[in-house]
Image 1 (cartoon, rainbow, N blue to C red):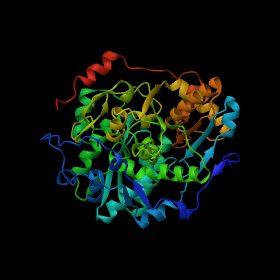
Image 2 (cartoon, rainbow, N blue to C red):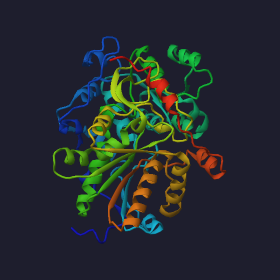
Image 3 (cartoon, helix red, strand yellow):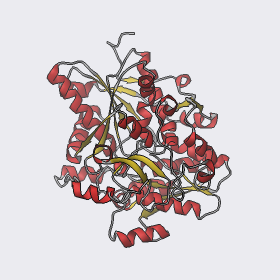
Image 4 (cartoon, rainbow, N blue to C red):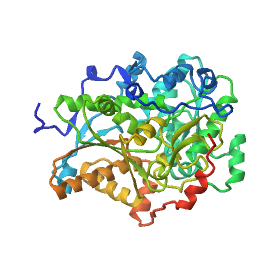
Length: 456
C-alpha cells in the first residue's frame, strides 16, 4: 500500500491488538548470559528466584525458547482501557525541521500513569493476585513505574509498597501523590526503614539515591514480609516481554499502511521501553527477513552503554539481587540528580546488552540541556509535553532528521514517546530559568565504580 496519504494518527482496531507477547530471546542465536546466584555464582534456578518473584514471572524470566507467550484474557481486557495506543506521523515536526525525513512516534502516554509502564505493571499484578499474594514491593525512579504499579495493584486489590529514589521523591511530589491516591505506600530511598537502606546512608551520607539503592530496599522488604513478592519496571527479560505489545502494535500499524522504518530510536535507562519498541523489528533482523538501524539514547550523566563495561554485576547497590551480565557503570555508581529520573540506572537489560555487544544496535549519550531543548521544540509543534526520558529519543530523532535535511535522504524515522511530562515541571522550570546544567562523569569516577565489579 502507498504511504503518500498517512493520517496524523494511526489507530488499530481492538481486534488487531496483540494476543501474545513476543520473546526476542527465542530468535537470538547467542542468548543473553544467565543470571547468577550471588551466593554460589552458579546460574539461577527457578527455586532461587521464586522467594523473590512471582512463580509465573520466574518462568517467563527463564524462558528463552518460546517465541510467543499468550497474554491472559484478563490482562487483554485491562489493556483495552488504554490500548491500542496511537502511532503518530509528526508532520508538524517534519515541517519545523525542513527535513525530507518522515518521522513517526508511538505514543504511550494516553493513560493515567502517563507512560508505557502500565503494560508490564498490570501483568505482574495479575500474576501476584493469581498466586494469592497479599501485596508487592518495588522501586521507582521518575515515578512512572510506581504510578503504574499502584494503579494495577488497586485494580487487583493488592497492597503496594514503593521505594522512590529520594531525589525524584523530592522533585516530583505530585507523582508521589498519584501513587498514594491509588493506595500505595511511598518511601524515599535510601531510607532508615530497611537494613540495606541504613547501610547505604552510612556509606553515602546525603545521597539523592539511585535505582540500585531503591531496588535493594524493595527486595529486602519483599523477602522479610510473608505473602509479598518483588516486582520491577525494567531491566529483566520478563519486563521486555510484556512491553513487546508496543512494538507489535507499531509494526501492525506500519504494515497496514506499507511503512517500513529505516531508523528506530528509543530512550534507554534499564531497557523496558526500548526493548518493547524494537523487539518485533529486531526479530525480523535476527531472522534475516529485514534490516533496520536501531539507536539507544541514554543520558550523558549515566552512560551505561556508551561508557560502561560489559561484565557481570549486581543489579542493585546493596548486592542482594542476582548478578547479570550487562553493560554497567558498577552497582555502586551514584548518578548525578539528572532530571530524567527513569534513566538513572547503572546498568542495561541483559537482552539489549547482548544485542548491542553483537553490533545489532547503536547507542548515543546526550546532555540534558540539549534534551530539553528538543523537548520544548517538540511540545510547541506537536502539542504533547513529553517526559524527560522520552525526550532523549526526540533529541536523537531530530538529529537524524537534520542529517536527512543535509543529505537530502528521505529516511523514515520511528521513535518511542514513552509518556508525558506533566509531573516533571520542576525540570522544565529549571530549563526555562536557565538553571539546568549538564553533568558528565569523569573517566576516573566511572573507573572507581567499575573497579569494584565482582570477580566472575
